[in-house]
Length: 126
Image 1 (cartoon, rainbow, N blue to C red):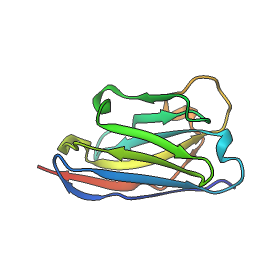
Image 2: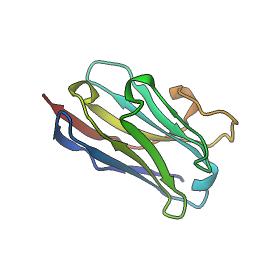
Image 3: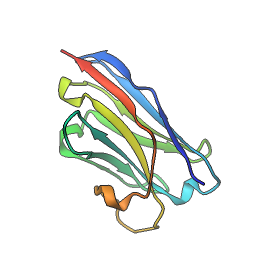
């Protein structure tokens, strides 16, 4: 069974940086497109970024473009989210997710991802 474990969250001041990691168990990591989502208190889970199986393609929601970078290391079975210039509105629980369907396009939809981590809290103070 595939398991995803996020780490790297914490408390940071506005303008600061954090790097989230998501370690994925199993042998098929390089076959999965991966995504990062976030959920603020009282709000729905929303898409942040996605990366293709070979890392040749990435996709970001508009509010993080130019500030966040998604990357992956297939040898380490890990996907990363580098977050710079953090804002208080970035405060949320961040989740990584795997899309194991081999679809051609990267998705921003929660229902297209079938395996999820437990989440890591990111809090940005003003």
